[in-house]
Image 1: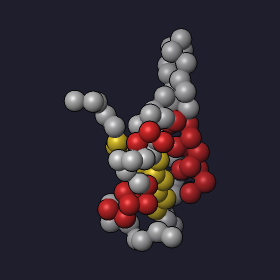
Image 2: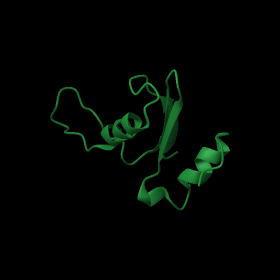
Image 3: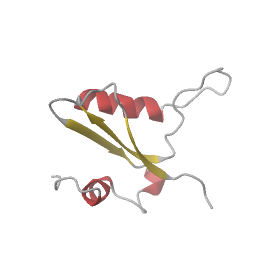
Image 4: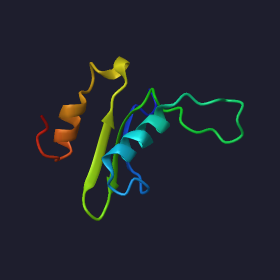
Length: 87
């Protein structure tokens, strides 16, 4: 079936901060070390959209790996999720 290719999820810690949600995405996409007991990152090959709700704003960040750009465009994906038109 091809396995997981795209997903949406929420993260709490950025608390709606746009810079922090981008850092969260970067951490998710880091290459993981298979020798580490607790692996972190390693999802750079998977397209994802993450949300973080704060008291002042909702932060959203989308990522599509280069090899999947023919299948999905970040701007279109965000707009299909009901978010305002992006420039």
